[in-house]
Image (cartoon, rainbow, N blue to C red; front, top):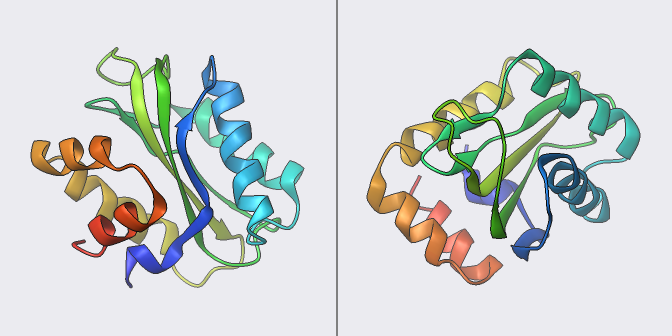
Length: 150
């Protein structure tokens, strides 16, 4: 699976000017809905928020990967936000988030597609050089080029 093929240009939010985790999540869900992969915004938003209740998706290093499976998702998709100001995400390392990927997959997706995407992103985000490159991205084209290295 090519991660870059899941990215929707209208779901690349650079910069995203939000004040908190909730509005950040809502903006990313709205962007995925605008791209057509999320067909029931409220159902998908509830899936994301339910996942956040089980534990923060703030993985550390200034990044978060909110994700959810929902019948409100028609096809797997990925959103990216680079925040204008760091956002408190209750991250595992206690630090605010500078950027986030949001993973959307249909509830009936075969296997664990969202886990495959999550693992691929997590493995790259471990590397400081990749994180620094992400924070330098200015548009969807640059982000797509970078994600093609996964």
